[in-house]
Image 1 (cartoon, rainbow, N blue to C red):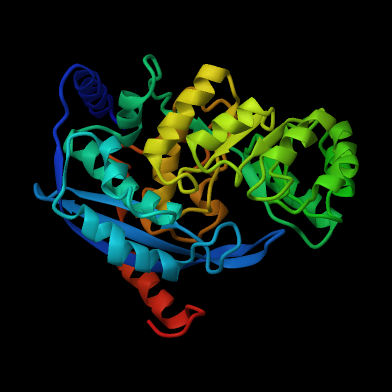
Image 2 (cartoon, rainbow, N blue to C red):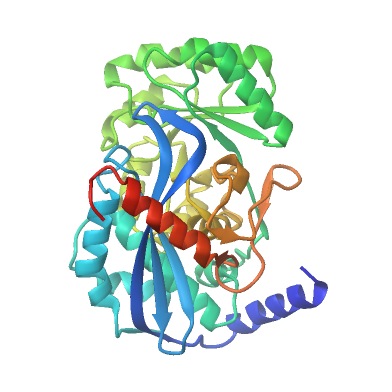
Length: 404
């Protein structure tokens, strides 16, 4: 970015702090379901994934500004209960019709428009993200500065997000160590390993033996039970940054008991779906670190409230990912650049997952394991229409549910 363009963005940010921002009126909403192949399968305790599915939300305002959001889900209900089919249905039949024609002077007012519809956090997050993008563009702001505008005072964007890499379950310990070494050589400063029952202690031991000083964390994706506490306590010897979501996806209570048994901080992910959940987890001592996924909690408005709670309680925070394509990745990087996000986030460079993303420019790993906020207003990346159409065609031709 040239100095002049950067200065213009900074000036716009400062001016926005002292004036009323322009409202947007939603004219239309179009949905694009896409299927994009991963460079390599990604395996967790849920199973292996070979393709990324997402519903992209294209929102146009009456002034002709276009905002993009990503409803990032999976082909089947693993991490959550939503799929591409359910997301399309909820968005097309309920959420989008409730939004079209509405005027918003503050993007945080959007959740009230769809409050009468319950659940479907990923679907509503995708639509809300498009609202935030359109609002930022309307006001000549980068999305990261728009988030900072509504964050606590003094929380300006740090321009880049510190990131780590997530490594799926590999065929062997040797293969895991090799992949870890490869990612470290690429410049990633924090490694997260997916684990499951029977694939944990020896895995951590092998990686620690090969790389004794790296920032290392483990992600269980809810595969363990409360009675596994003694087994999980064996992981304390490996100086882990955290163990993520070891117990059930809907549990907070037993995580509180588990944290008392462990020296390793427990990081909650699936269990915390709202600011209220976060407050409960804090009250019962169930959480040492928060993985905040905007998609999981229904969007960036709720994410900002949870960000505030983390900042006020000095709770370590990082932004998790759903292996997003460029639309969602750009928005997550914009949020992860806020200063209270103080641990490396799960937002890897584009070439970690895709040969060619649907947006340009690509995200590349920078110095000290960082991704820079994209230049330009809003999310700062442009959807490539030819790639979008190809990914939509791939979905129509290859989706496992049959039919278009």
